[in-house]
Image (cartoon, rainbow, N blue to C red; front, side, top):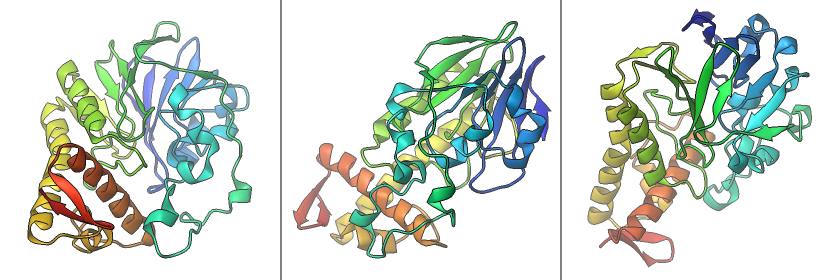
Length: 291
């Protein structure tokens, strides 16, 4: 579904659910799309007539339609360039062997041979850069946390920010990449809050959020609430990552092995942050306790 968010700006709400994502279309002198994961809704975009395709970051649900944009210049933050060439990172399963006893498998039931590897990247975007499409101009916001090179985009005339995977879903935020910095994620969310945009839209909720300060604050605070649960558990019971995952401190349910992996990967990143803060230490091989 196309939702008109401005004179020449549209939200492409995906109708295909999980592993797909919403996109932003600028239908101006320069026809531009942000992300390509809208599935069948991309037919309305006319990929063959898009001049510039920007990806918010390297994950599959944001780049899965890139090969359809045959004449577009594909742009991505430079930190993301090597990530988009790594299939495990694209599929958000990098580091599986370190955290899972089960063997690595194709979590999305997709044959890797069918994927357009390597993904083409023609140029880069950077924080503060203005993208000029004619009468429509918008700004790149580097918002690391979900991934190191993740970007959001501010449309000043529409008073709208496209947040990408600052996703505002009930199960977010997600910060499971190896080396993900939780402080960066918190700072990125705070940056958006301090901008006081009138509206935001994300990759995975099919609505436009008006006056989003409260919902963004609640979303940010989930990171620290999860951390409090982890600390409380470690005070009572020194634990391994596997034992913490069994307590469902991040996800209430683990309906699939990838969700269990993502819980463990986020627990790992919490433990790294808490160790740096001096609140947690490794008291035995792989066993963590509170200080």
